[in-house]
Length: 384
Image: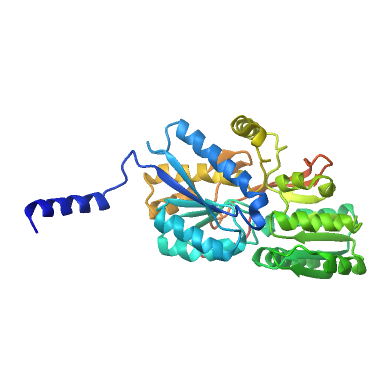
């Protein structure tokens, strides 16, 4: 090899191992269900991410570097997630993954996260106890979300018997397993528990069993988005009018249901009616940016916005995007956003203020009661 070629090779090697240049963007990967069950809510998640990136870049970025989004469709399931994660981590070379996804998608993507040594902030409420040193969660788990619903039904509706309906996958079964335990622990009884595949849409047979069981209340846990819509529509069509709580519905999906959603009880860490300066500023910024195209901000999209700011804080504390340093910083930083102060300091999970609400005729959510800084409980005790 000539001297010139040796010099060229050495320069290439230096370039390959040198730190990111100030002009290089920090790339945020967003694998999300643009198709499949989550397609109803995914657009609002992407909008929240776009606003956060725009705001941060307008103020100089992070450590002098601009943020860049790379969005990939995970098709709301395992097979699509494997492709999306592989593409983002190995081809797009993202610095971090920040996403709202189904549990099936999350579980399928975690091996790539581990192998690719990529930080991953999961922004979707879920069934709990997903533990990985690279994974942080800023959304609710059953210990935070279920008790307000069951307690309200027992105390205010006199409910003693319950029927449970879910989508047949990790989230649906995990949420209802906790719900069953909590109901039985507090003196209630389960008179039926039924599941439909995540992509199923005909709930007729299950609704028939519900009517035969004659419970005092109904609690459902379906895949976020389309299954919520089909189940609720068919429940209303069948004349089901008993107290009904949906553990998976968000405010945006409720609005899309129209009159069918009226009366549904939900427990959430965010509703648009949160009365704070931060939430009002967020809603105003979303309205200004997206106008008539704005998708209703909700309990699946707002954590996405906040997670990008949490990542920004971690990178700034770490002094760069090196994974080990960012992972060390993530549980020590916080961000005051639309939901209040968020910090993923409880075994990679976050204490959250929870709201018990009921969907009104116009699709808005009336807050019945609030529970401040609800602890997520024991999620990942082996993680700091």
